[in-house]
Amino acid sequence: MLTNKKSLWLSGPYLVWIAGFIILPLLTIFYYAFTNLQGGFTFENIVGAVTDTANIKAFGLTLLLAAAATLIALILAYPLAICLAKLGLKKQKVFIFLFILPMWMNFMLQMVAINVILEDNGIINYLLSALGFEKIHIANTFGAILIGMVYDYFPFMLLPIYNTVSRIDGDLINASKDLGAGAIRTFFKITFPLSFPGVISGITMVFVPAISDFAIAEMLGGGKIMLVGNIVEMSFTKGHYYQGSGLALILMAFVVISSLVSGGDAEAEGGAILP
Amino acid sequence: MKKIFNLKSLLSVICVVSILALTLLSLTGCSAKERLYLFNYGDYIDPQVYDLFEQEYGIEVVCDEYAAPEDMYAKFVSGSAKYDLICTSDYILEKLIGEERLAEINIGNLENFSNISEKQLEAVRAFDPDLKYTVPHFWGTVGILYNTETVKREDLKSWKCLFDGSYKGQIVMPNSERDAFFVALSVLGYDANTTNEKELREASELLKKQKADVQAYLLDEAARVKVESENADLAVIYNGEAYLAFENNGKLDFAVPEGGTCVWLDCFAIPKDAVHQDYAELFLDFLCREDVAAMNFDYIYYSTPNQAVIDALDSEILSESAIFPDDSTLEKCTVLKYLGAETEKLYSELWKNVKS
Image (spheres, chains in turn purple, orange):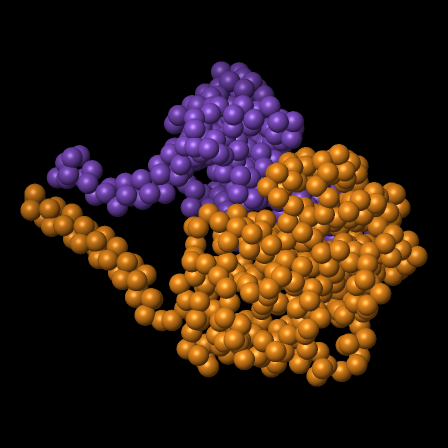
């Protein structure tokens, strides 16, 4: 059989990949974050990243937006996952496929389409005015970015929850009912605790990419809302690598902390079924 | 058993190695073809021009694109990619010339250079006094593209209409710091090229206050489409976008406020470290050729500096003031200048504050 030692060097190509495209860029960011324009060591970029008023505002907005997107996705996904788990196996497969389908479409197209739907003369407002309602203004606002985020990250919430819920042993539910527990009690004592790892995994998989996002904000915010990711992007495209790296490092700390809070093995829960 | 597995791992290693080798080969193999590396604004040359150039000279043009001039400068200076030819705007060119990053162009090699109008070359002297480093591509002004059904033309006599709340939520501002600040500075009555910190801070306050009324900060095509699709009533935009907008939506018109506007000149330049200055000059000469310049003009309808093209145009297009601003407009125009590292830093800080 293939021993551990021997199989290890089969990962060689990937190790080369990691070194070149993950470790090296990370080290570069660390270097820039602690360097000033003259090439000396400094904490200025880090301190600047958390004291600049525009940055503080961006951090607040980013956390708020990511939390809201995660919460909405959870509220939408949890009941749906329970429904799906109760369907026959064949139907489950069809529905899961339908929910993953949007992920096959190019991200830019998704965002352009959402913009067309939300715009002042977009599809929603067309329908509203056709039905005699007032038009709503949602394009290029906080709300538009929120909708974009929920849309984009929804499958990452649904799949891990569905995964755990569908694996709950029906006998446990029946036993609970046999012992006199009602539907609500059964849910809180059996279903919810058993699905909890999936919920945690879903929260991580939505919250973490959401706090580092900049593309959705750029495309649906009309350049009016700056998240931390947007400021990092702006710093780098305008050539301010030092400040940009300082800010990117702080953002990375947020990502690491939120991944740790939700437990190390959370990724494995959803990773299995993700295409 | 053991042997078979060894064979398997050997096979997979052979696979991986050969894939890597093939990738490397295909990457290096490309260099056999002659190439010219160009760095340009997005959608600024008719793609058919590249095909024609390749047909005639056997040199393929590889074009990288950017949106805002500051982004171009950052990438260019970082040296992460080497270019044989770049195209960018006046004040960035001035900065590049000042930093001695550009090569002198052998204008004598460009047979068709004489097609460029004298008037245009005079304007270029503002940042390239000896006409050594740049060859004009397009030029234009900044104005307001608007919907005639919802916006009154007389409001547009001054840039103030963008700040007095009369078009709440209907304004598209340029997502480019110098252009946005220019509008605010002009309303305040300050010079577009001011380096006075107090004046710039005042302008940024004005822009910040205006933000509630702004629907989006967009550039070029994105801004145009917003007004075309009637999702916004007016956009501060480069005049070249206006003509295309008219064709797509008959209700639109273009106005330049009477207080004056800024005029921009986009030119080509050759970096000092260009590998193929000869190809770059060949391509520049090709671009100045009447038929090629006409192709580019028909492609984007920005004001062309090519006199031969202008002479061949019919009077209907020539009288289109959105494409060819009249002299009275041009007299009141300012060319944006490079303001020095200090002011540039202040600009990015203020712009970040406006947008966040």
